[in-house]
Image (cartoon, rainbow, N blue to C red):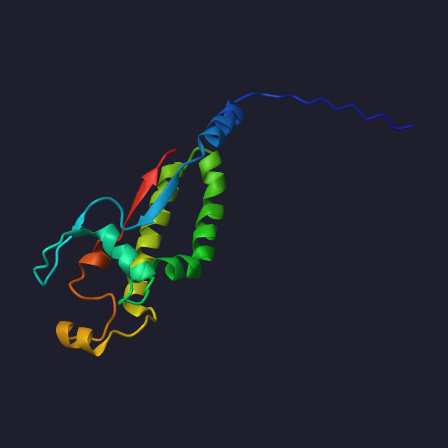
Amino acid sequence: MVTIKTSIEVSDDGSLDRFIKNAEKIGGHVEVGWLGNKNHISKGGGKRTITMADLAAIHIYGTDHIPARDPLTPAIEQNQDKYRNMIERSVVPILEGVMDISSLWQFIGMEAQSDIQQYMVNGKFAPLSPKTIKRKGSSKPLIDSGQWRQGTTYIVSKD
């Protein structure tokens, strides 16, 4: 007959408490797009002032005379795996307290902002009308003064 004796020593260095505390702090989110009330300055000296968010709604959903040209949805959808990987790689550092959750949202916000801006330049959109091409001197949809593209931003919320 063989007898095996073992003993287990448990020492608490506080890491479990830190892990639980960090897990409880996980939350928040990032919003990306054209946020707030920043005005779009019309080159043509228009009588009405619209915000970047108003301009986004016009381009994303279209109007009776302007076809929808949404750079937001396809840019985000095409990069979902990248954002998911960023989150997956950050879980352990966040739970270990090495990384702050708001840093993750900042990184994702910067990436999404860049992805949307790139899509505005390189995406496939409904063509401009000949009248619009003549007026702006270019056939490139969504790119005129650069204000709207540069107005793409993000906000991190802690919830």
